[in-house]
Amino acid sequence: MPFFVVDDGADSHPKMIRAKNAAVGLWTRVGSYVARQLTDGHVPGEVAKMYGSAPQITKLLTVGLWHEHGHTCPRCPQPRPGDYFMHDYRESGNPSRAEVLARRKRAADKKAKQRAAQAGFGADSAENPSLFGEESSGNHNGFDEETDANPSQDPGDSAGHGDVSLGDSPGTSRARVPLHSTPLLKEGAEEREGSTGSSARAALSLIPANWEPSDADVRAAQLARLDSGREQLTPQQLDVVTRKFVRRQLDDGKTAAAWGGRWRQWAETERPEQPAAGGVVVPFTNGAQPQTKSQQQRAGLAALRERLQGGSSA
Image (tube, rainbow, N blue to C red):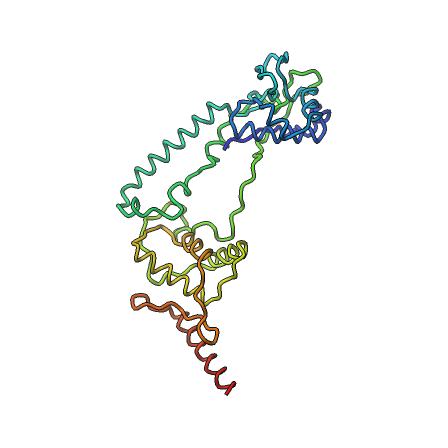
């Protein structure tokens, strides 16, 4: 997504000082809206009134950060009656709608070429796409495109508060500030890289019969269960969930480059097996899916504990 450009000297700019914090907050918030909606600096009147108050809007008009219909600034277009325009929006380094759409098209064309090149992985990759899909590995936000998109401007320009109005002073170097929040990844939420350390996409393959989730996968799944109001899984229940997951992937012939993400989603919503007599969860077993050594050890300890408890009660 595009960024709204804010000059790194905006905090001490005369216009900002005269506008005061409340009006500057409205200017910043609406700037984020304008950048996201690609309005080229035009501010719908209803959006301005939804985000701020009439005195705040008046402040921005008075100091010259915004213009209303009928203004005399020679560098800014006329907004429609009832709407506003952010002074020097384009001159401040903000990309135009046409530039953003062109970059998105280039990114889409690049992704299409990558998909075409990956078609050689075989039919499984097309018929059985990853649970998160090819799109999730792409760059939806376009940070590689957007962050390099704005060309360097004359250091004398100001970000959104240029030197046209009386009392303005030259701006300093600018820093692009993203005015959107980026969701934080949960611990272990990224697929693990290959043993070589390369982040390049690995070839798709079937899940190994003895596949186990990593500690990071388990922590992420347990945290997600807590967040959604579910109880955490016991080690025995984790074994059951994992074996069921592996069997399902093999039965369905699913292929993937990594399995941690699929397992986490499975474990986050899976209802564990009900405990058998004595409160011990019976691990999932299958003739084609032998238990791992750790499962066998835990099952033996559980059986021994049950016998000891039975002997003491007698």
